[in-house]
Image 1: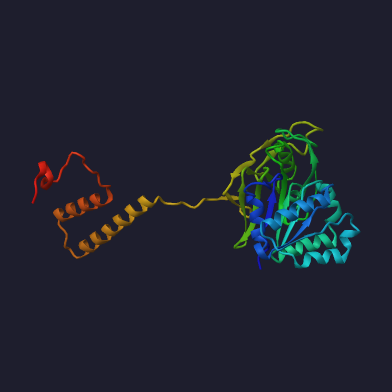
Image 2 (image 1 turned 120 degrees about the horizontal axis):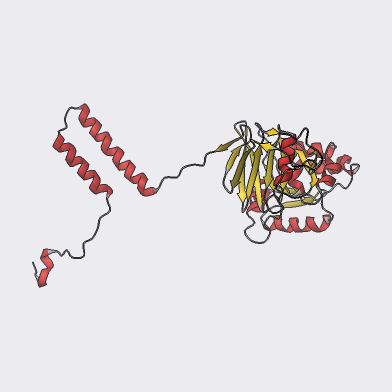
Length: 334
């Protein structure tokens, strides 16, 4: 059985208008049969945040929404609380402090239950802090800036739902290019994934490949440092880092990226209907011509007539306003 989808949301997702990301989450969780667990551990406004998402998910058609909010590692070992994750169809982790979220649930029975839920097909979504914790490596904290600098940020362990990656959120809005580049410069085995606000990276398993699909108004930025040249191992405190050869992918809505092979998935090509009809007609004529040639029954004049017919069929008819039916000129009658 394939693992469930991951929805990695860059924060500030639309909650008032089209709500495209949240609508997709509820649909993936089962729609009218969805039973969603909201984990607000990262937020200092836990009950209030749960109320907001409870109202939103029910309005979008979810059958049931429950609050599951361990506040300490002791609570994350509570088997009754852990059991709440055993019969949900969707999990949503709110924003807040990702270090708190990681410190409370990673390496506990509650964290293990989240991983088990993902592996049995449950959709796991998270926004802001709830996005960062889904990767194997998590941005702990750090400042903004476009230039990667030594010690610009720090990394902590995440849940590992998405392996060999590090996720950053509010990416474009808070100018977090530099800190994500710093991380991949120091750990070139990792793929850096930066998600803009009101944007989601939806990761699904397709034929043993992890395919990332972009949904929302912004973009997902990916840094692939497989062939990086860097001085991160010798750079002094706070100095700019050499980061050369990093492959950059900026993926807007609808883009797809293969995380397994680290390659862009080409978009499908949609043919123009008029062009498709013309091609079909031309193919039909070519097949008839091939049959005539095979029967040794075609002459140059017949070939010219056939080509002329094909051109007439594929060219739009033009009405000549100066042309008159001779039977209706100057009041003539039959």
